[in-house]
Length: 306
Image (cartoon, rainbow, N blue to C red; front, side, top):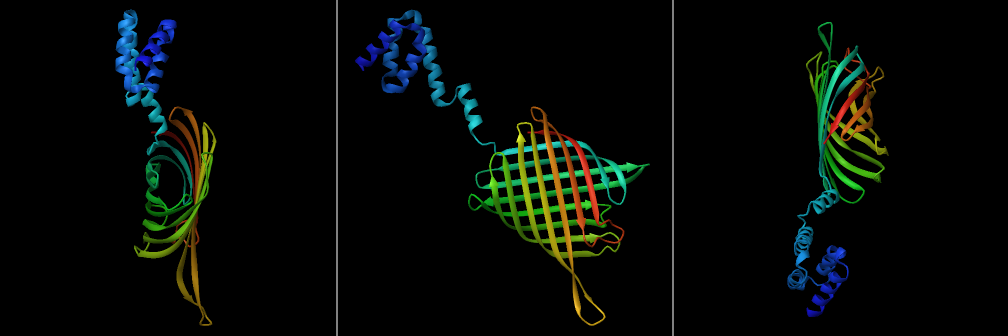
């Protein structure tokens, strides 16, 4: 201890401008003797006593994690599990009618080490000559758990109320397995599949249908640059429809397909504010009477992320 004390005092005497670094080295090399050595240093150099005390307090705060700089580093190093966004904008829809609409949406996401949860909702609403001609509400949720670096289990649920789809509502629940083909900070690609169940109410007949479907999907995320990103989500639902008896007495099963593709381009404007262009294309092989087989929705939105 005496040797350490002598070395520190000699070092400060030789170059007092390096007092801060000398004290930091003392904490690293001889933490058990810090208090006694610093007391001797203050007595030897009374003009530097306040500086020695201030440096010592700063080092203690850093070691305990209370120092502002250390807290900033910790905040940057720790994963940000929660994220979300709110978006407002306009859209153009080509379906049963062509209409310009207002659209709002929100999304919250939790991404942990093993679990990931997503909850989102969107509303598209438009009126022409005082008559509502666009009204679509979609709420969906998805949760997944990693089984390995590449394979995960998932469950999902979606509620859709689109007045011009031919259905009063559609509710879909499902689950299955997913596989991460690529998973890098720049590019992500995953595929997934599994069974689903859909409950829907047909507007024209008020019939309530229950369907068992097979779902196959693909998701892509591409961080083009620090200020631009592109995502694409494609889903395909396959279902067995009605059994038709043809004239020769044989039975034919009418297979039904439904596909959707959503492409999104985000461009950062400043901080957490971005501009978004998106295009949502949907197809149903056997839509209800009076409803279109194909619908599309293009949107421009301002997005605030958090």
